[in-house]
Image 1 (cartoon, helix red, strand yellow):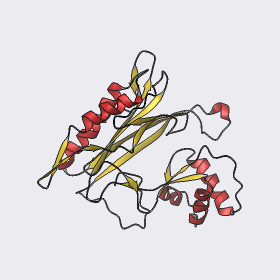
Image 2 (cartoon, one colour; image 1 turned 180 degrees about the vertical axis):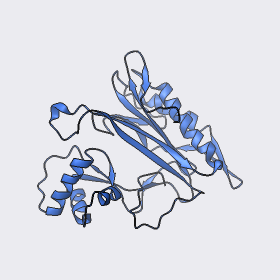
Image 3 (cartoon, helix red, strand yellow; image 1 turned 135 degrees about the vertical axis):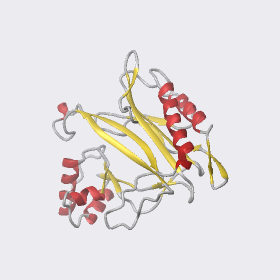
Length: 263
């Protein structure tokens, strides 16, 4: 399991000591709510993530993604090509291996997941930062904000959607869509007021007191106002890890906005 899983309160799922799991942190750094007047939408989002686990045997896997992210941060800069950032990430990531139960697994960069630029209240916006070497000649530019996000796996290094969806995100590019279902209209208002462009899960809706909202949520997804973000997995039995920091490219330096003493 790579991510996008937040089981509802009724789920029998448990966190096991033998597994790994990503912890995502996205918060508004400054600015007002995105659904007020357009002229006031000056907020910025800091996006970061790390992998939590209980067994030290996963230390090399966690170290691989952390050092790969740091390599991407070092490589990033004004006029740097995105494909070159991906090459630096892949080189570091795939220099690691993990021994599990007497078998050695090479750590592979998950090639169909990327970092991304971050816009005003848009957590995924514009440019993609690959985790592997590509021919992408797109350049980073002064003033841009990027989430340098890397993913490593002991499996095939490719993830696909699977299992029941629990994560959703408002489609900020969708235009006006007339809604005939009252529950869908009501739910869209709750989403806009409480989450804006940030992803949310069904557990959050439960905490807000929403009742019998599944049909309304399905309707919002069907008409394109909300995007479903199902869990992403590699091959069964593999282990994945993730590490992410947000940077801003200033005229004379790059600043890691999400780094602290403990992370």
